[in-house]
Image 1 (tube, rainbow, N blue to C red):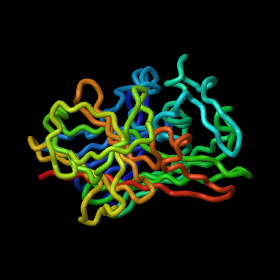
Image 2: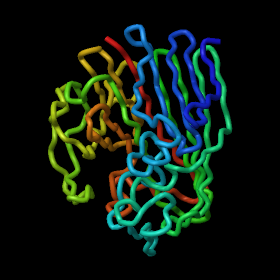
Image 3: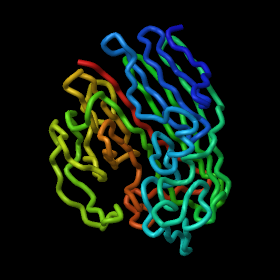
Length: 329
């Protein structure tokens, strides 16, 4: 078979590797920490090139995961919740205490959800002539007083031909009442060299105005800098954009919702979220050697501002899908 899937232990990390044996492209996933996308390697200029800015070993992951969040599932909310509090169905909830791995302070206790450090179970795996896939699950059972609900989070990774990776998340409400929900991812991508020298384009004309605490103010501002491909330069970004509703969401040669490219080596990544991910968060960390491109179903603080907030009824499900297409040329 052209594709394969196998376990791998590396630096104390227990990974699953999806590989295209023909081209050498491979994706590695870390189930034990938020179903994390750990690696995406492709052949480039005679060597294996790493597209993901990841943790080098278990020690670094345990030290930095709760502050940098490189690659895990963001659920049941992405980004921030203002003051760590929200109201739903006439009740007030708080994330101010009890979140595993967090230190004191409001910002930490309301950042990137509750599953980023959870151990997902492998429930399915397979490979064939055209794909390799891995299915992971985590059943959240009323584990934090700020979110007293039950839901099942299922994550599917599928590596296909032409360096196409599909990541699909399905959430099932296991409880007896409606629950608030938003979904997202937080991978950091590398293209070689500095972000300053990359070119970016995304199909959005609107940016959410943020407060100093990176909470949306409720105002939408025009922003068309990257409507066409543009050099990033020294621009500082930690912003959330509203994708145009008519952008093409398929990866069959149509226009991507977002694309980043390094002109020096011709390496590019195109992002094809489906309609469940209408928000695009872009973050350039210090050092500027990688960039977080985050597909979000809801805006930051959506538990309060309700921008993209999903009210998932008891017994119902919702699926969120994004395709990452890598190319050189």
